[in-house]
Each structure stands twice: as C-alpha cells, then as structure tokens.
Image (cartoon, rainbow, N blue to C red):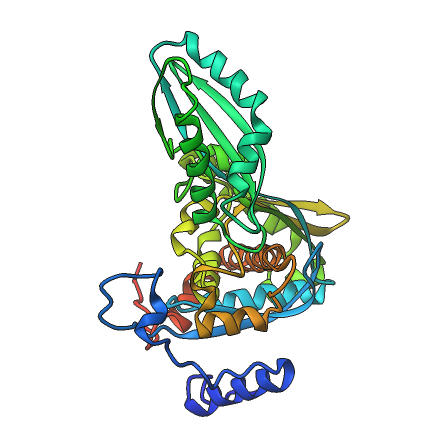
Length: 388
C-alpha cells in the first residue's frame, strides 16, 4: 500500500479503513461516541469527550498458547514514531518466523490486612484461615459468576497479617471483582469473633495495584506471559543496520544502566501498554504495575535470540470500557472475544511489546534514535547544527 502524501491525508486514512474491512470484516467507519448514559460506571461529572488518533501496526505473527496467526494491533497514541517503530519490529519478527508466546498463569490478588492486639493471636488466625479455606472460597465466589479463589497466601508482619487472596478472573481484568469477593470474606471474618482481632482493611497496599513492585515482578499479577523470537543476523543488518554482536553488546550497556537506576531491564514497555490499553478499553493506570518486564538478548549461532517476560498484564475482554463501541470493535479486530480471550489478548500485548523493544534497541544501537524522532516525531523536521 503506497502513500505518496506520507500517509496523513484523508485519502490515505480511507485506504487503510477499506483494506481492514476487506481483510477482517471490521468496519472502521463507525467511530461514534456512546451517549453519556453509556459511561455510567466509567466516569463522573462528564463534560465531553477527547478525540485521540487510532492507528494500527502489523502484521504481528504469533505462535502462542492462545494467540495463533496474524494480527494487526490497534494503538491509541500521541507519540510520533511509536506506530512506525512497532511496525518495524513486527516486520523484523515476521521475516524470522514470528514470535512465540507462552501464557504462564492468570492470577489477580487483593491483599487485606488484619490487625491484632498482640503477636500471639496472629498464628492462631493463620491456622483458622487454613482450616476454613473452603468456606471462605465459597463466600468469595458467591459474589461473581466467573471469578475463582485459587489460594490465600499469608505474610506475618509484627502484630498484623496480610492475606494475599489470589483469584482467576476469567475474561475480566477483575479489579472490582476481587474487591467485592474479598470484602465478602472480610464481612464473614468480622462475625467469627476471632481472638485478638482489632481491625481489618480491604487492602494493605501489598499487591501492587497501580504500583510498580517487587511482589509483582516475582509473583505476577494478572496474566504472566513470556515471548521470544530468533532474529537472523542478516535480518538485523537489513532492517536495523546493526549485527547481532553489536546489538548484544549495546544491550549489556543498557542493562548496566538499568541496574544503576534500579529499574526493571526494559526500554519502554509502558509505551506499548498505554497505546494498546487505550485502544482496547483497559485500565490505563495499570501501566504503572504492568510495565515491569525483563528482556534479554542472547547469541545463538550468529543470530540473536530475544525474549521478554511480562509477569503482570492486567487486562480483560469484558467489563469496564471494553463495552464501548470503538474499544469493542478493536477487540473484535484482534479476535479477542469468547472463552480464553483475555489470555489471547495478554499474549498479543506481550508479543507486540517485544517487537517494539527490538525496534528501539536497534534504533539506539544504530545511532538512528534521534533522527527518527526528528523525521517523524515533529510537524516539521528541525535539525540544529552545532559547530565544533
């Protein structure tokens, strides 16, 4: 598809919409906003809507646990070069057989705290929880049609105990689901005259909800997915203008910077998440906890094996803003509806994020990062020449 005007004209936009409709039977002509009543439960004190551009990147080729095939990823972003960068990463991986993904688990937690008069009471309470787990499970699951309480982990701290209540939330992201279910358990505990119990809080700020945390890096929250791709050296040279050895060395340099800064070793997972979350009706604030991720680059017989572990992808395909027309249509474009669709979406997100990481790493390594933003991240190309 050629765009002589640079892709920004109305004619160019119409070409893309026509192509998508012919290929996926998804009509992008209907982008109407819901009536105000449709936003109930999503916002308050509404005064209008903000228009944001919607773009697509692809093809994303995946061989995964739940996501298999070719996908075009919807992105809602105001950052110039982001869509182009992801497209380049997707093209590179597609030329190398695509991206493999593995869905490890789906576990969303809510972590109430129980405060006691003295430490002597805490051990008794932990035993009581273990003995009454089935009763607590039944109470929690009575509040939801789809959520399941998997287990309750406990953490003893002074005269307090944190119960990390772990749920499978099905196709929903499940933030409200686990809150309602855990609150029902708390209400029951209050009626049981637990010795020494002074107070209890629905959330101890332990589970990393809307926060970047070591807990979520180690244990995960939401979907845990691993993605990998074997990039041939000739493809690296063709599209990124660097070879495997050079890029691998630069990754090590960036890794050292991550260690010094105390951040998880990735370049910009948050960029991919924010753009896809806005486009598919996810809770964008979850980017704070979901942007944790570990990427690595390894030599394999002259080529480069790239892998990304994302332990916390808090997304769903039902509930919340997934019901809005545009977001629902974008989920349909990805084939993310029905059974296991939230797992499929999590794999697509992890794979697209891996592609974006590869592209940015290559841009930095080839010294093209700044030029790319000058060319595509501005309305006019502005280059200041410095003598010396």
